[in-house]
Length: 146
Image 1 (tube, rainbow, N blue to C red):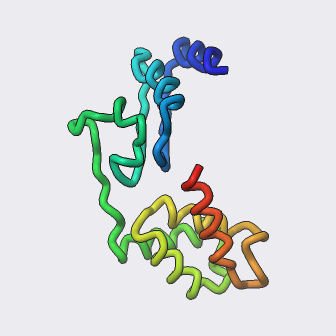
Image 2: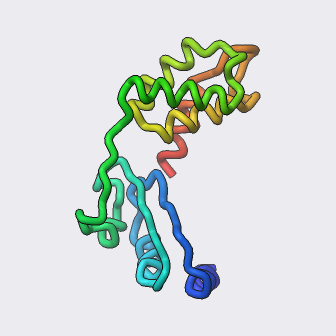
Image 3: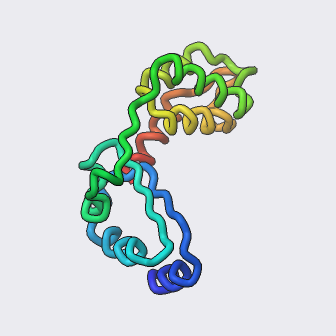
């Protein structure tokens, strides 16, 4: 499988976004190392901090090529929540408690705010008009462990 992917990317280089990196190991590093040096390929890694880059720190080592993004302010996070709630059709649900919990747990992380709103649009996370935040939070935490 790796060989097929390497061959495909060598023939048609592309950009790859590696989001929510959480300590990838040596096998991931070895796979991406070849892509990293493929002409035309672009690898972008996103992690909460340097440590979570794991073995990929060997690829993403140059501070001149790093962009540190600060968490959203409370106002920005609230605006993003409101936009995401509207986009995912949540405005007919009871949002007051859900909004407070999302903003508190996301701590300004825009990806988490949007993902929690996206998950809330699924019927399995609702009980009537109430959104079951605890189930959504568990889902988010489990995804971060992968």
